[in-house]
Length: 155
Image (tube, rainbow, N blue to C red; front, side, top):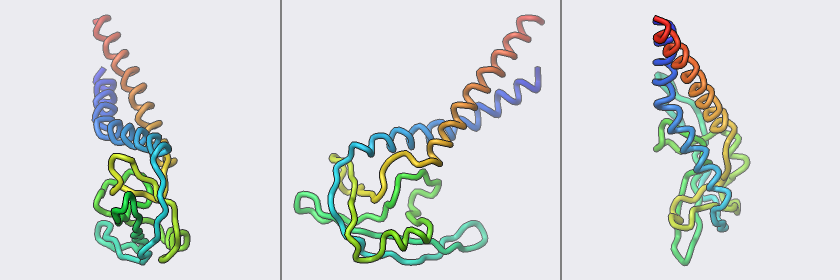
């Protein structure tokens, strides 16, 4: 019985963080398919050093501009991938080739918040995987809770 309680508690605590983050990512990714489009220009695409623990990793920082209703916006959000460091808008070096400085690009933005323009919309595989694992943990927790209840009824 103690084993099932520990497994149930582990599923519960892991899902305490995983479920809200993955659900938010899924809902935002799905909603982004219906966002408005605008044309923009990449202002800068440069290599930056990002601190990861005790070391630094080279990644790409991409900044772009676009205009909506005669208001100029600047953004650096490339995609809607979930990030633990929300202020860090850096991505892989392959993005430098795809979004070079001066290149015209499509910008997607929610109509109520045009300042949150992004270059890529949709649900990313990592978000879907995180949501799937969260659902598996919910199922596992339910099974463990059922076993605990069953053992308690027997004793």
